[in-house]
Image (cartoon, rainbow, N blue to C red; front, side):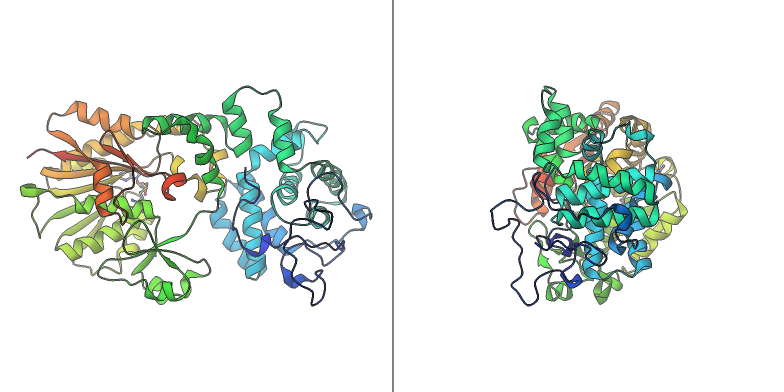
Length: 533
Ligand SMILES: C[S@@+](CC[C@H](N)C(=O)[O-])C[C@H]1O[C@@H](n2cnc3c(N)ncnc32)[C@H](O)[C@@H]1O
């Protein structure tokens, strides 16, 4: 686990204040809250005058007052983080959906919103490791604690060990929060436990947790805050795609970094000018992309109009690679028919729709879930309507209903999402090994349907946002075994051909795998299957 696990550079990171406030208003985040010497230079140092790292090690300076005398008002940013953790634990909510709503509800400003984001996402990502630490500080099994108390402890632990929040503020404010929303009794327990947590730095805790441990999977799981089965699955994935197993630490750590927000300008329709003028930087991997500088993207007219969209660069690359395959005599030049078999919520469909329009092709975007089909229509709404249609139905039926009808088919199947864990902080703790096998029949049926729907001479792009071989190579290999009119195209070369670097190094045994720790993208898999003419 890295020391600071989200929203880097945001307001929540500006800790390091030396004052010992903590009563009432000193929330320990956001320079506007007072506590820093008036007019003095801003002190971002993590070390005090003695060179000791602030907030690290046992000699910490807490306020002396009993928890019952500390602030009764919960600091709004910490309250938001607490509410997010509660909704995730108690209601199975998604943090990325709950968080903006809670931020709005409590009217947080930009700095506090950044702090709440870093705190809630960091506490959720680090949950497994924080629980292992807390288990050493609590005198009973953690599952015997009130779940709200456990969430407060996780929030306190993340502040103490991984955020640059002064220890006294982390402790006082978390106890104050617990007092305000859970009660005085639990706040005393939280106070006592967090003092024990604060006695060591994160590195010291990690060393203690893995002391005497020889199982490398367990060590990696604790150090990088992932379930053990995911560590094993990711290691297996690296090897299956020709990468050294030793990259596992980097890969897991990439899941703990705040994901970047990429933009795509729909070809022929959108422009990145406005985004670049507001601080975005041009994307280095694929044309028409940019790295957002954060903030409220909805303020950009091009984003509001839908001609510039938020989309991971990995998704952009695979969609462009499929569109760019040279079909030779199997293609129709203009007038090609394209199919996106699993289109919801429409990210790749919108890029494909714009590319189809430029090329004089048409796109059918299929999605069975009506509310997601609606999102596909919305995503495509910026592309003139004579180019595309949305079908609401089961993709498994399209092959039989419309055999040999499409020149290009994208089948971006439902999958475990192991390649996009960095986007959903809680998801790693929710998933189970069963996710890898449960979807296997559906993935195979959808690919079979896509292969039936593609014309001889056409191409099917099989895509997942998981690198696991059970969802990637095994599915493709099975399909190739069943028919003798199929061949794999070189997907690595196809990605290189649409990339700005021309050398992504993603190809292995004709399929391609992108990686967060290498490419900075989600871990998208691509196989290009050509149906022989
Ligand atoms: C990985 S997502 C696709 C993401 C999409 N291509 C994008 O870029 O926004 C998989 C989609 O497949 C849909 N799906 C599930 N079962 C399906 C089926 N039987 N036929 C077609 N699509 C299905 C899910 O509802 C989900 O929207």
